[in-house]
Every structure is written in C-alpha cells, then in structure tokens.
Image 1 (cartoon, helix red, strand yellow):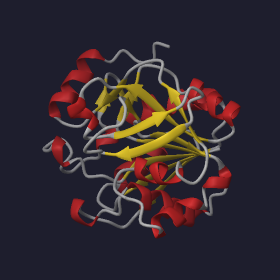
Image 2 (cartoon, helix red, strand yellow):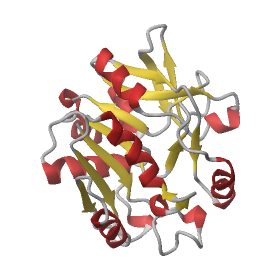
Image 3 (spheres, helix red, strand yellow):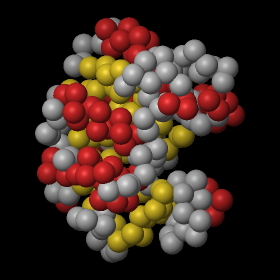
Image 4 (cartoon, one colour):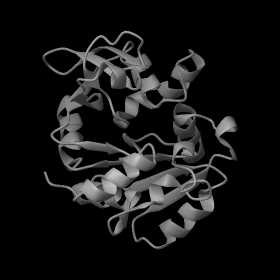
Length: 245
C-alpha cells in the first residue's frame, strides 16, 4: 500500500501563518501535523511508501522535512504557485498516479487533519470489506453539512448516495478526507475526472465512484480536528493530546 498525502493547498484562511509556510508542517504540541499522522500509520506496517503531493511554492519545505525522516517519503511538486491555479485534490491524486505509475492500494489522506484515534481500525476495515472505503462521522449541524461530503449508507456501511457540499443533505454522515482506494479502482480516478466529477474536494471522486461500484464507509471511533482557520488551530493546540484509541 502507498499513502498519498494531499498537501498542495495554500491554506489562505490561516494567513499570515501559512502565507509562506505549508499548513501540514505547522506544529501541534511537539510534532508537525504530518508527523502525528505518519507515525500512527507506520505502526500498522502496511505502507511501503509515503507520497506528499505539494505545490511549487512549498515543495522545498516538504523536501527538507522528508530528509529528516527514515520513512520512505517522496515529495511531488505539482507545479502550481497560487491558490487560483491549484489543480484540485482529485487532479493531484491523478498527478501522483501518473508520476509514480501507482497500481497499489492507496491510502489517501489530507495532510492538515488530526485524529485522536488510530487509523489501524480503518485500514483493517478495508481489508475485511475488500472495497474502496471512506470514513464517516455523525454531524448534527445542518450548517456544517452544507460544507462537507455527506453520505447515505445502508446497514452494512455501503454508500448508497454521496454528495459534496449538498444544498439539501440526505443524511448526517460526514465523510472527512481519509480514503482507501482499492488497486482495481485506482485507474478510475482518471475516468472520473474525464467524466466531469468535481476535482477540488477529494470526496468528489468518491461520490462519483460510489455510483459505479461498491464503496463502504467506516464509522470513526473518535474525533477529527480540522485545522481550517486561526481559531481552529488555536483550539487544537489547546485540546489535542495525541491518539487515545
């Protein structure tokens, strides 16, 4: 399995902290956001390469960070230099697939989220289901549902319907940016893009894919911290205590 880390955004809502520095390398406690994620994933022992997909503006920072690790980390520069010219998360995934000729199962994660639980359960869930999988959590706020991916699932966890940022949410199941693509579905990323699926939000491909094949959704056993603005960054610095489950 390869792990793709989506880190090509410009985090404009976190300016001035991220005006000249990438959000995934901000510190929370004594570690960067990326280090919290990768140290947990590596304990599972199934990932043989980590791929950070960056933009041109910040790729050097990730190269320096990767050089200080013993983990097998590759850093890809997608060539963009501004928020206005960004490729979008789905095109960045396809960029990595093309650059590295990826044909393995892929763990695809956003590099700017923290979890208080281990991803081991999610990885094992996908091994049991043998399908592409996403994570889900219950979100009571309709306002927040308008700003995220929302899935309808059956009693077995299969996604029956999924939409990104729906005007009229069909459920309260949010789908944060943590995915496992089965190897046989990896070639479908390109097909999804060509078919017109959204490319900015990473869940747009999964929404398209779930209408073509079986996709399951793993119920999160803990909390996700989405570091979207200065206030949420301040809050996570105060509250985050690492992986508790």
